[in-house]
Amino acid sequence: MKKKKSACLPDKILVRSFLGDFKDDKKAKIADHIFSCLECWTKFKTLNSLTWELKQKEKELPAEALTAAEVREFRKAARSRLHEMRKGPKQPAPISFARRLILIVATSLAVVMVCLCFLLCFK
Ligand SMILES: [Zn+2]
Image (cartoon, rainbow, N blue to C red; front, side, top):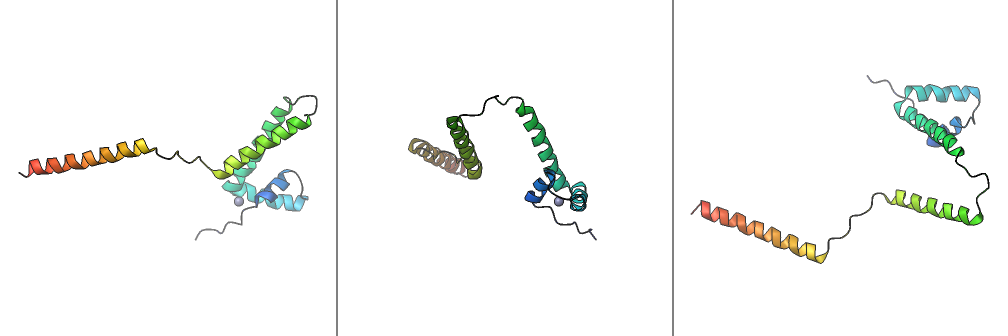
């Protein structure tokens, strides 16, 4: 029988533990789970690489703080990006009337061709 796996850590707990919010005994329990669960291990690794990326980007930050207008611009961009992510992949554009007409004509022609082939073969 398969050994019952302990329940996965909620993302919030994983992040808090990553930030060092918990005391040693709880931290040890969380670490035990992370090292025995591929899913949580992957999330933990993602947090690690994000931290590394942020540290790299830190060097690119301008010495002066962003202006109010820049902050607004940044928030707007972040919000629209989040909105796009929530919406999922873009819907394909609706088929135009001309394309629809071409599709109908092509399908009809194909049907007529098949009928003609049958007629010619079983004559
Ligand atoms: Zn897990």
